[in-house]
Amino acid sequence: MMYDKNLVDFPRREGEVSDDARIMRAVAECERGVLYIPRGIYLISEMLVIKNCCSLMMHKSAVLKAVKEMPYVLWYDAEASYPDIVEKDGHIVPSDDPDAEDWNLFITGGYIDGAGLASCMCLNSFKHFTMRDTSFRNGKKYGLRIEEQGSSWTYELVAQNLYFKCTLPGMAGNAGISSNGGDSHFIDCIVVDYTIGFEMLGGGSNRLTRCHVWGGPIPPRAEGELPEMLIDSVNYVLDSYDIILTDCYADTGMTGYQVKKNARLIGCSYFNNYTYLMDDVTVIEHQSGSLLVANGLFRKTSPHSDLYKNVGGKELIWRDNIIDGDFDDGVPESY
Image 1: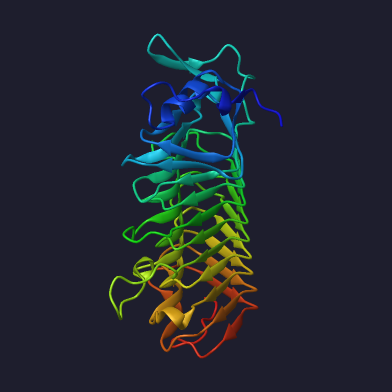
Image 2: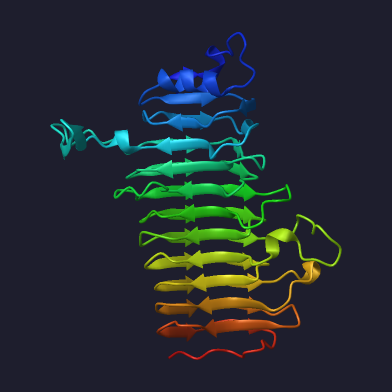
């Protein structure tokens, strides 16, 4: 494995009962390098903050686990990787070395566990960043939050094989992925039992391929109620301009696809697992913008299901879709 520092060489110091301080010591000595985090459970009592372009290579069984309340387990700010714009004498000016950009920052492997105490991770101020093969558990508000601080240069996240799952009660209303970034690709990402799966809120030209959102396993708090994460659940919130979903699956949400800006759904599906007794569902809620729906498959499994609701949408192009079941509102036509 190619890395610059190994966390094993940064043990806890006398009196330390968590691992955040030792991790931050390792990060500090790994500026623009790669830090390897071996297998193990690392207790985080204070938010990890990375601003020095240190990439993380985690063993598949390395767990960063919150043990106290905090905003995020990990806050990553990539602004320093792009020195073409720098601060000088209190002013933002072009750098003398505009070709020094680092396009190779990454996080791979491991688990980031909010443990119901914290959101898992926030990623900010990147121009190009790669995340791969990482799991996010029990994020209090977010699994992965992309761009919280309003940077003007957040784009080009390549995220592949990310897994998000909640196993604890008491976090209804949270989101697996909430993004204000643009020009990003999400491939083979799975979100389980967050109230909102993908919340695409900003930027433009984002692409989701073979992503799957489903809910239901966390049991209800009282007999006869819906599982808490399903109440007001939305599999995909599409409020990012010119977004394309290809071969994506909305599985057991009160609303499958909530469309708020121009969007294309190609080869996408919806299914409601009626084991959880969720009724009155809506497959597509078209709130604004123009929408193309093509080559999809949408199944009715509960007594009351609306296939398509137009509550302010503009143009709809509907073609070559398979409809399984007699939806309450029938099949829409292009307009």
